[in-house]
Image (cartoon, rainbow, N blue to C red):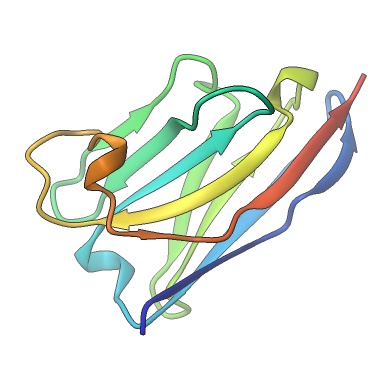
Length: 125
């Protein structure tokens, strides 16, 4: 059984930082395209970052460029999202996901195979 488990969310003041983690079991992250998404209240889920170890491709949404960074620890089968200079508009539930086989990059929402349960990030002004 595949499981993706996010952690690291919380309440932080604007300008602060957080590091989110996404730990996988039942799959090897290096074999998949990995994405980080967020969904704010009343809004659609959006992809904010996507990368593929297989192709070396990386995508960052314009709204997070320069502030969000992805990294991974293959030994721990864990992917991290470093979020700096947090803004109130970053408040959302953050999800990680894994996908293989899509012809698109980043893959559309329907193409993603596995999702975590999400972790809440709340940024106070």
